[in-house]
Image (cartoon, rainbow, N blue to C red):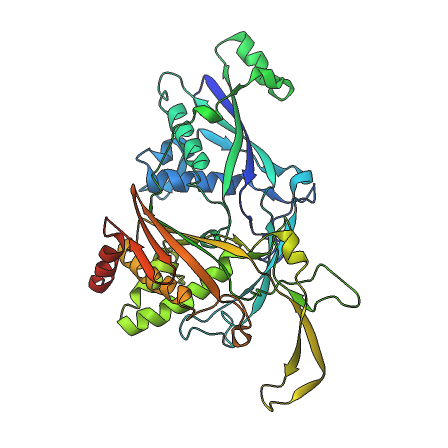
Length: 450
């Protein structure tokens, strides 16, 4: 910290928990691998990733001077590099290995020009991505270096950033729009070291040896934030009609009588519809509807745009979450379904083509958030048309739709917009409760969208 004037150091010890799967990519192995510490040989979150998420939130959703807090480097008129040093320092997030369970999930690269896989380098490849499973806990330390006369507001700014993390407004790593990367603090303990006092300097020199009692717990005192606003929150409740199968990479049983494939599970063993699978199915249906309506531009607003130029790329405003199917014990006892492998070209049966599948059944609750950006009202209107098709059994989730799998018997769709709520119930007749005209206004916005 040479050249930086400060007389106080505030240390924050953050104990956080993954509420969903987390993928922090590796630069050593394949990009689908989780980052592994070169010494501990265990997953970790590098300090630069944590700092990047905090800085991105500060720049996107607050009016604070992020350069003053996080520092900057730029070229002056003489083409020499000048640097404003950061006043905040992050350490790597180290996981409690007893809480870590790893997941491996399948993905397929899609050519967005034709909506299918192709032979190009950017499409058609099936790849498996590693995740740290939900429930994993880690600890990171954050240090704030202050000049007490000039930087009095920075402590408040840092607490506001912690409040955003607590509110679930920050997501870390990759696949954030598919439900990954949600991390919330369990505990945040803090201590201020006054370096203009002898006792403060002594404590700072021995800060690693201080007892927990020397720190103050502040996680319950953090301010509530709502900068990263959700325009809409949609919850679809229902149950599987028949069975559902979203194939995992492996099966949990081996030997005679074991299935050849089974529905994917999370690190807790629950049978799930991954956020990425739900997102892919909804995108496919929304693309069909938008093409019919001549509103193709809404697809990039909904799901984002990936371009060679980073400035042209942006994230979409739809965020999907994993959904648990039924309960684990019931699905563990679901009987195998045996099928015969048919040659699609000849219509004949493959020799020794009998195979077994272990499907999942039960209640399901699907959640989607629409972030307040990129024409959110029109995007929500397009989303509701796709959810109508899901409820009408025009579309399915997972594989095997030709054999009756993947249909959802939707009982209700609930929409939250600020303080207003709308509800669509599917009984003998469809009943709509929407006193604030949330749905009608969204359909109007969809019609008027550019």
